[in-house]
Length: 283
Image 1 (cartoon, rainbow, N blue to C red):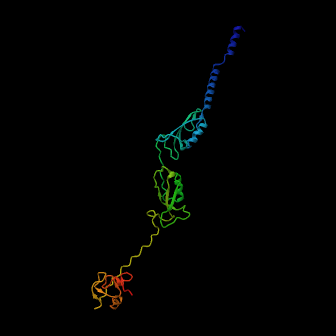
Image 2 (image 1 turned 45 degrees about the horizontal axis):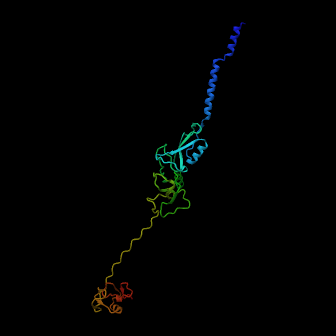
Image 3 (image 1 turned 180 degrees about the vertical axis):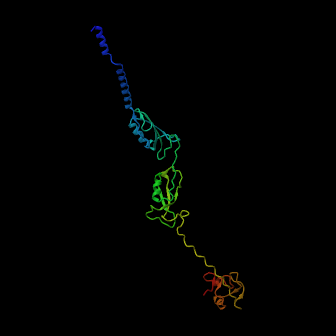
């Protein structure tokens, strides 16, 4: 074999195929992309947490944090423990770089979240619990954060027994549809009646009306004054200003057959009426 043929053979053997070089470049690029993906982290869900607790947890996870009012009021959060997280950006499950800033959209504690970030709060309304048994009504009200519930009988003349869980709600205050803005300050009051007993027409009515009072007896017909006996009295005026007869004493009245004498009758005077009851010479 000639010398030129040997050199040609060496060149062919030492030169790598072009497709191998391309494969190495793709492998390096894939390794870089995989490394970048491994550096991303998944954002936890902080919604529903107290803002102070959410901030502490997020910073412990390596995130920076800010917050803003989730409603249309744009109120600053001076005391983080008085606020609750409604929404967050980036959202839960997002893949982000470590140290990414999370923006919490929050509302005051015990205030419902708005339908979306930046919208007004829509307060829940009192549900109707009429015609429900007491225990079911209380459970439904509790689901609206109304836990202060007072009860009374719908009838004034019926007392509640020791157990009234199955008694039926006839009246409720506040009424169905009223907005619940401060549930912790709102007392619900239920008026109940026994199962099988119709609700009254109005609250605090009587189940058993009292017997009507008897009609008063008519006044008796007035008794006409007896005619004076002839010659039994002398003319004149008594000290009551209305008599034309005068008797010295009750014996004279009795002797004349006029006892007793009533106020206004001839001969009556206060001097003959010892007890001042309007009847003289009674006995």
